[in-house]
Length: 356
Image (spheres, rainbow, N blue to C red):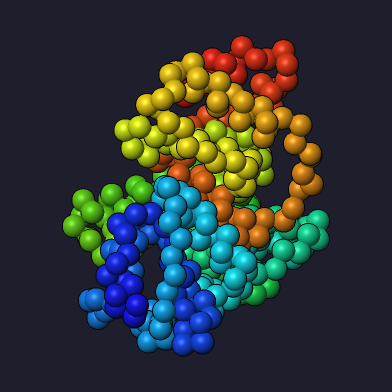
């Protein structure tokens, strides 16, 4: 079967596709809710493709696919295969650096807000991240500096104002005095924003966007809309990181069709167990017992995991799980560790009943 025939015969099912070159090497791994439609999109209406995608398509000579029961499992399998195989075009289509951080350095005349690839725990700097999109982080940081008028053009503190101060982009902290006090208040606000405890800067940006729209200044409104989106994505990523570090016990129950449920047990960002439950042959009591048994077998007495650095792949996995739970088409349950002890069976029983 040639490539055209393979593409035409693909099912409209969730799964992962593996693109191969003339030597049989896997050069790209992707996921899809409907395999046939997604793979066909590479070969039809290609005018809108990016140069990297066009280059990928020119090198495709064959493909394989792996079916999954749900779109969520396709996402997770794609992430796992990319990590294991490291296909050439998956790497080309991402920033070659692993991840980025926002750092607030305190070892200079005044605190500096920067974007960096390096996590250097020197005891004098605050780090936020990791983030996977360098362009989004840089756009957000640049926009925050401009909107808060802390875009200083002087690399070192001195006794006179920098050029950007005359342009209205710097409040003048470079010359010290009251402006430096105001600057430190702004930096504290930015830290609180990134910690998720104070959204006033984001609210300010949204207010400026709405005001510009009311003035029919749509160019400025679009600028603040894009900036608000970039800053919001930073806060979302911090939530994902916190969610991952908490290493939660998660039970997911999703309807595959009228007679089948898919049970998935997740620890942190790792799938421990998955199983299909036949609702046509099992009553509610039997379904409850099956779920309870799986929880007991796979969550109880797990060895304590040492904390590890959150890599790009772990962050990608966590993002998939976090986004899936927030828009889950089925239902899910987060199980506190104390519910797994013998004396807390009633709480777990009640929670499983609610899941069903």
